[in-house]
Length: 390
Length: 141
Image: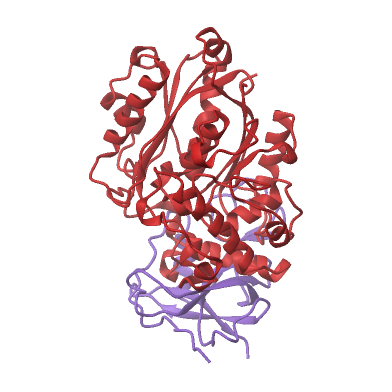
């Protein structure tokens, strides 16, 4: 079985910067070099490359080949995963499948994007026909619509959302790879009083687009054991759902694909939410994390505000949350941003958390959100459960 | 009372239709809001797709919506990019039409205090520079 039988033997991450002067392939090279040094796996032994798609690479339809060539990699398996912010998790899942199928042995999952300095998206994307003429600001507008509907159905405590923002910001202060501009503590009042962007979405609900890169080296569990990797992380279970409730013309936007993907991931992993030692949900907006707590079984639908009030999300708390600051407080490295929380989950399980190390190093839960569709919540939901081999 | 900007003076670019969405935009020239109707499943859908979201088959009918509905959810844009920059605040809503589909549109002739989920609204039109029109909604009086 692909998941239990694969192992992450190394991780790497660049500093996240507001606007960098390095090309996306230079960041990719930094990640490759870092992984070769930390694992001792030579370049010639890396025979698989799976990329997350990149805003910087959007002008190329040969993206994985371009990057493989720039990095001097000879490969038996090569692809780009293009499910938006779910791509980094999706790449890891596909790496385990390719290894399990015997197509390759050592896979580099590479997440690099320089959206802040080089956004190469085409001028006529496919999905703006029905929204561009409305002054629709994309994700903030979509989450404004979602938040208002949630509040109407269940009631919403904005101070509870602020509590999540404050916890994440505290973690970014402890994370040297987080974007420097964001490494300043905030209060719940700062969150509440930050200016409206797409009412009720505030500035401190949103991510800041940055440049950055991260990556993983994945191999079979047997290979990891044979080579003596004592610190390894095992992907235990994965679930991925695209176009949740697509065959409905009026959709309850408070119900997301994470409910389905989460059930699948927990079932495959054979554990339950109370076993999770640290939670690394995809955070393009603060409320997305609350919805995921509801969908993944930490609390019931509609009970998110109360659950947040009753729990401590700092790295020493009852449910450590995005202990590197998440994308909202570390900066969103374009479409590679989904790698930030994934790398942090792996780091915690390997016991490399330093000042922000969590106590329970057994299981981490990492998620993805990808794509903003018309009139629904988001396009793809991904859920990955990771376990320490210790 | 904060009157929301009606966005009628915004110099917006008309959307560029795809081969299968042309009938929708052509219909707006006569101020017709055309939905896709799946006769096999007796259901409407919006936005326009090449196939039915219910059974994956083509052969969809274009049927004119009555133009009434209610606010399903909304956001008030207080920050925008050109050409909307300077026209804030304006309303963007999801409207549930009587036919049972959700459609996204600007809400005009409305104060922000009056905009609420469940508000009954009716269809109105904003002219685009290529002769087509953009559907919008205003409170039903």
